[in-house]
Image (cartoon, rainbow, N blue to C red; front, side, top):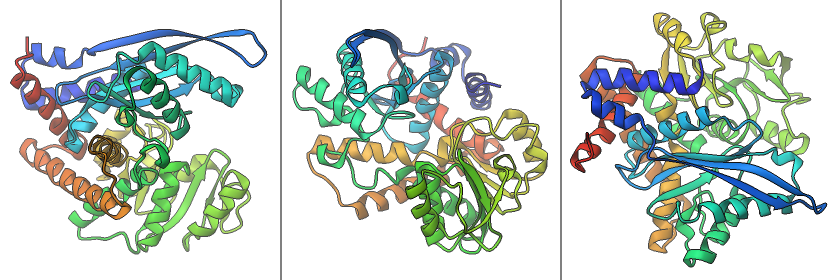
Length: 411
């Protein structure tokens, strides 16, 4: 089941639980604006190349729209639509004053030189500069983009609108990026896990963790869990997978990954089939890579008692049902991985004020938001007698619906 179908399904279930009127339900699903632009640029060899860029702006009832820009060969409009919608609910769950958006350019960033990527980013920004803005739509990095991409967008946008650091988040620190942004999603995963375990009278220390994915989110989550005394017993990335029932030495793995561009060849554990990492014996499973990895094929074999969704949409709805029958507790992506967008919000706030925070303040504010977020989700679970995923969806949808009605926008 693709991301759009699943997101729409969760939305409809939440709307039903909340008793939303059908006109309002329909208007909440329709995107505010869909932008599609042609980006033509000279390549390094002098030939012209054309790429298609787009931006889906889903909802702005609660504030400016917010969401990543990805550079990827298969940028699927349906998926981008789903991700824009997901950002609307995610920012509402986190209780930050944003709506959702998502965008991208259909290109293979690995095949373009740095200067070609810069020209592409600047052409794209020229096409959409009057449709984004500090109080309109604030882009951020996603797959295939990073702080450098944001720096180019900021510079190009500022040529038209004057110096505007708050127009994008995830910037380099030297251009107004926030301290703590790099670790934010992984740290948010840690705080979310702590809140959930706390509810069950447990703590991170002594629990066995399995983490699928060792990119930004997975590696930070592993490092922070390790520091708190959690045992990471299995890990995987695109190069391979390892297990060590006594716990993997995360600091030396991080060093290995830095030198060898991946987990493969690390001697502090036994090499295993990356596919089997999800079904390894553990207390807590953290999928931190791609969507749809937990499905009806492997759901029955999952041994974890808790699943923390650090990736977007890692669990298929069919797997959701199988796992809940087994009594597995799933902390949904729209809450669990919202640390990134929360610290993006802090970055935007700092830029608008022209006053930067130290890292300690960023992390302590993040903890406050994540802890309060869990309490709010839990309250919705009790009100509507539902699981955590529906608790988070009803919380998000309800906040957006209330803002929409208060503005007088409902049909």
